[in-house]
Image (cartoon, rainbow, N blue to C red):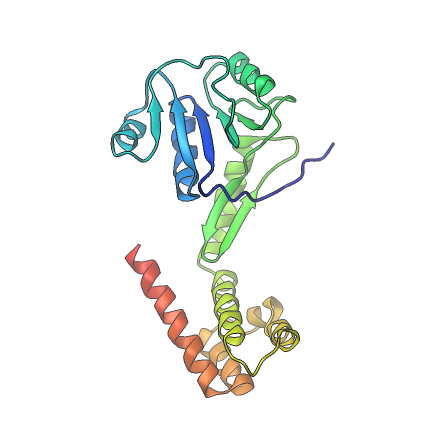
Length: 225
């Protein structure tokens, strides 16, 4: 049976992490960035997780896992170094559980996620193979991160935003314009100045100015992060 890929909006939802080691450390930043309310059960934490707990970024429950801890959470990450405990947590939970140790009983396999503004690049495998997924994901992120594809994606998002705010364009026309300036077209025009000139010729100077201002603003914001 093949797995069904999905992106979850965890903002404001409760997530339980069991285990305070390096695997938990790798998972925690993305969980916190998603807006999840994270509780972590572990008798000890690696130093960086300890600093994050001290700053109040998540709730640390400093003890070993107890049966029933998983109840009521939207997502559970069983990340201990003992596969039998991870499987036990998965078997008891009525929700979705990701286990640190790949197994047939692991209902959730978390993909590698690369954030390439505005794209989310996710890589998974079936059956799950975390080391392979991470290796391929890092390679693809590096390959796409500084190329024409990410630049095209930013322009696409901003152009759509500008057109939606302009009462002269209805949705079918906006769709048609975006299909004209598609990825294949962008790859044949690798210089941003050429692409901006084409947008202006097709849509007018006012649209070009709005597009340029928003792109500049996004670039400045990304440099400040």
